[in-house]
Length: 385
Image 1: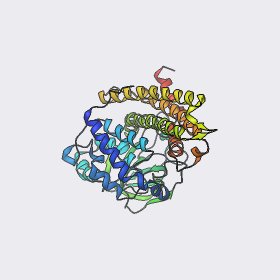
Image 2 (image 1 turned 30 degrees about the horizontal axis):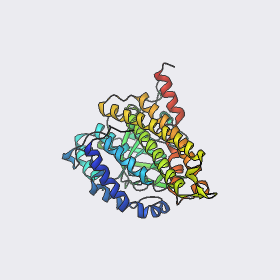
Image 3 (image 1 turned 90 degrees about the horizontal axis):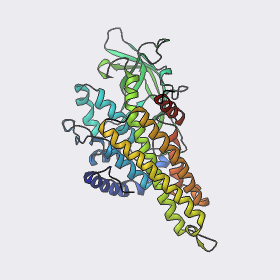
Image 4 (image 1 turned 90 degrees about the vertical axis):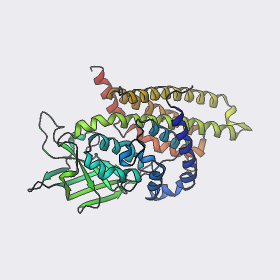
């Protein structure tokens, strides 16, 4: 179906991104996966290309192009090629909205130019061992020093994407106790310089997918964080997290839809070329029916996602809308990619084929940003249930 969500500028940007991926990522991507992360200097290339500064105002070194659709174009092109930009998706997709919305003018001047150039790579640390989706249950804490000049941070985080190479980490921690009436009370965000004494990167976690993205355990032992490096107001972090989950979940929906479309494209190309019992796999009725079903489901995902993108740009995408988009697209993508892998036969299980990478990479879409079960809970609440 013809799409109307992007304009000419978006499509010109798409061509630039597509060429960059073909030249700078695809030829070396296997090396990134073996290393477990993209090279640190690759992020400087993204900075030079302007990827990190699209939404950042010009006074901080960015392009000042508002809206999320340019990021959606990047996600679609990465899925089309079956690759990623390492852990940098968190840098722009998750961390930037917090900095743009809640940083002071002084903090923006201090951090955003380096953010745009790639000199300061960011990550966000929410999840803790044993808490998962229950952010209100986190125990990482910070207390104010006696002289009031800095916070003293202690605790541990896990599943932190970009955690190995990050220079500045947005750490969600407890700065005052919760109450029986409000478990969400007392959470704050501290922006932690990773060179700080007591800050430690633990294991680089080995994942079944997204292997070019560094995911780490972090620990904090009496890490001193200047009071000037608190993001937003003390105790308001939970409301900040809820506000930004809308964009995060929309981004996941965009990626899931693009991955499903890429899976169909990969499968169509494969079945036309692969011969079985003397004829192309594409000639079998089962192949045609399976791919027809998949193509129809992808179009449904695309319509849902494009509508969500427009609503988000207009400021009308609700928490429940974003949850529904994430739930529908990620669950559908899981089915579509599985069917497309099946059509590859044994080769679908071999990592040199992009369908195998899509299969493992996209399994986490139903987990991070809130599990499918959490999405159902959010949607149910919107129904008054």
